[in-house]
Every structure is written in C-alpha cells, then in structure tokens.
Image (cartoon, rainbow, N blue to C red; front, side, top):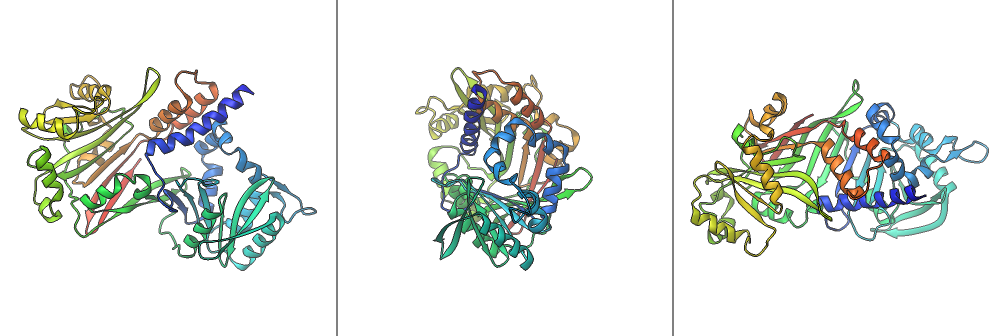
Length: 463
C-alpha cells in the first residue's frame, strides 16, 4: 500500500514537472502539441511490435499512468451481452480505426477534466453504424451543446466518463466535453498527411511569455510541424523534415558553426539550440534598446553572432532542485567598460542569482546557476568532453553546412533527468524506477539543422 501511494504521488509530480519544465501557461483552447498518424495501422504496429515500446508499456510507470484508461480499453465484451467481442480496444481498432487518420492532442488549459483529446477522420457508413451502437450502449443520457451548437454526448465505460461526438465522417473523444467539441471541429478541416506521422507544436502555448518577443523580433511563425516516416525494419518512426513559417521580414540567416563554437558545450548536455542573430554594436542598455527598435531590414545589415541555449539538467542542491541552463554568445573584443554596462543590462546587481562572465576566448555565459558556468568553463579548458568531440555523424550535422538553426537533444538523459527530478532525490530510487530509467536510456540522441527557404525555416533531423 505504501508503494502504491508513493507511485500515485510520483505520477502526479511527473505531470506537474512536464508543465514546469516547459514553462507553459494557459492560452485559450488550443493544443500545446498534437501527434497525427496518417494510418493508425502504423501506430498499432509500433505499439505491438517495437521491442522498446513494449518494454516501456509493461513497465510499472507506464501501467500506473494508464491505470484509469486501461480499465476502459481492456473492457471485455461478449456477443450475448454486448455489441462487441473481445477487448474494446482491439474491436474498435479492427472495425473502425484501422487504416484511418488519427490525431492525439494535449491542451494546457486550466480546469479541464483531462488535457487530452483524440479525433479519427474518414469514417465510412459501416464504421459509423458500429460506433453508433457502441455509443448507445455506453450512453448515460447527458448531452451538452458547446462551440457553435456541437452536441457532445457523455458515455460511461466501466465507470470511466468520456465526452464523444460522432458527426459525418469524424469521431472525437476526450474526458473533457470542451476538448471533444474542439477536436471535432479540427477533424472536419483536417487534411491528409504527406508522411506517416506529424508532430505539431504551438509556440504561443508552449512559451506564451517568450513567443510574442520571438515573433516580433525574429519573424518566427507560431507552429512547428515535424514529419516522421515509419521504418518497417526497425519498427519505429524516423524523423524526416520539419517546417516553421516565417514572416516576409524575418532575421534568420544561415551561417556555419565552427569547432570553437561547440567547445564550451559539455558533451553530456541534455539539449542545446543555436541560432544566429544580428549583433548590437555595443551591449549597453541604451544601445540594446535602440537595437530592438530597428527595422528588420536594418537588422539584417548588421554582423551576425552565434547565440546558444544550453541545458545540462536539474541538479539537486540541498533541499531544492536547480535548473542548470545557460545562454552563451560570442562577442569579440568586449572591453571592461562594456562588461560593466552589460552587468547592468542583465540586472546582475539586482538579482543575486544571476551569474555572468567570460568563459573562454570571446564567449560569454549567463546563467542562474554558478555550477552551470563552471561546467562550461571546464569544457572550454578540455577538463571534460565537449560537444566538439561528438561522433563524426552528429558533428557533421551541426558544423559542416550553413544553418540558421542547430539543435541537439539527448532524449534518453533528458527523460532520465525528469524521472529523477520527479521522484525526489531525498528518497531511494526503487527497482521499479530503475527499470524505467534503463528503458528510457535506450532512446537515441537527436540532431536537427534548419535552413531558410523563402518564408520557411526547414529542419532536417537525424538520430
């Protein structure tokens, strides 16, 4: 019983942590991210045949997270008593979902029954008749009208409540009726996917405090769309290309990183992002203020400099966890007077937790964590291995071409760091969590590079 209570607390912290890590806020009824499948049979094949996912699915962590949903999905039916036979999930998949498009969305909106929603498109008359029978069997008689008279039915499957809408060739289902209504409208205007899977991320929901500045200053669009292709041999989805729309007047520019630009980034970084930005003539408060007011055409005439966001993970410091994140930029020939002005600009004298200094050559770092800067300095001095010593294939993806954006994420270590953070370092890590950590450790790292093509920032990635 004690272990079960701890697991419930742990699962709650996992969800809270994801919100904290991404620094998100509510932004209307719009999904923070969506995952779409061109053909549900690919997703079904991945779930049932990918050895890594099967290990994850059978782990204590995953079973705990899916506890309530599995009560419904694994509900057994018989021909004598129900309109389906076998488990509900297998019946619906074989008779309705197979070979059709499906989208799964997550909404970060307050006061929802649950933040998840699903829609399925291209449902025919036969499939619609099957669904009507199932909905009638589970219907508890409650109907709401939301979002321009969308009629949302309430159903109960083994005591678990869901909101569902079946309309023409679309089905939407969610725990929350508002999400079900939003998903059905999204389903009606959905288009056939070009690739097997697509991940869509809305920046204005993911980072509402940062995105308006990025949109205005850089001309970056709101949505990232990343396509994946299914590899039959490895039974997994492989990254293909991504796209971010840009305004006509954007400041993105493709340039080449050097080995030196990677020297201060520790190899065990969980992720880093590099972009090129127009460089202010000076870093005084007055100059930067004028710089931010410049027209984008004038900004593009300036010399560009590399700016990197680096995250080393969460470190347990006494009784709390500290994010080890830093911004690093290259600024040649900064004199002592400019350094003092920059101190004032970043508020060093107002916020004791702000750390800023030159770490090597012409590179400067800003971080809330002194330990983070120390790690960057060690990488500069070659006391620890840096990203500059990645495998040739990973390194080639970053520095052997002109890119407007470079991205690297060690998904395995990132996931394991979240796991440790959520569990609480003051308690022993039980065997069940060690099992999950081992499974997560098998995820490959990922690199992506972005180039500008007109009003598109195109990303190409590799594992």
